Length: 312
Image (cartoon, rainbow, N blue to C red):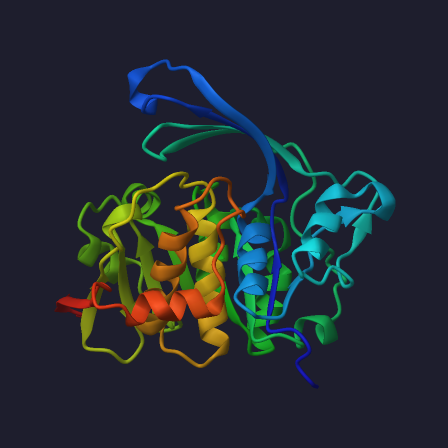
């Protein structure tokens, strides 16, 4: 089958009310300097990032069966994400979030996620087989059979997991051959504090890569058939808003996979994309294009990946 789309994904959709304040969040209180509303969601924003980078992205999670009032679906389409294969249901709606952003760009997200998650169990193999990569988040525990089918069809599964609900999450992580997770989650999940120990603990023979993202400290990578573990340092930027930076990282990583890059090179590309994304407000307003990412990577001050330990 011709692969019409490069990256498919399903996960939470969100509408974010964003409040900017004049002090860091740890100050406890501050004056509001700006208010805005934006669309978000881990996988949704990652797919928008793929489209902005020039990739062909498709959302296959639940959307409303009332297309004319489906603001989240229309917003994805506006950004170039294909929604024609998304299943529909009457109760589908986005998560509502309130995000407070401090003066240093750090943010706190409060959300209500009592909405339908996952995707349809009868999603056709032909739909999945269009793509090279499937992007998922922690809510994919509601549709892990689809993830398993994607793996059998040969898709790379890039997982953005930020919390665990027990055995269901463990199964989902086991199905994901590119586990790209925040270091903080990985520390809590494994009980380890050191990134190298976590990369070893999360490894399995079925993995292609484990990537630990650590904000302005960069990322840590283990990739298949490599004898060393890697640290990819972050770019030195002034963060305006870190909302969506992790989602941008996942989308850029997935897009780089479709170009045949190995995981460390994907992490380098994604690190540049995420750094650019935090220089503007909102989760999607500053998402970069492909040329800008390449220019940053080619810059004389671009971080260079560092081998940090043997893989075993």
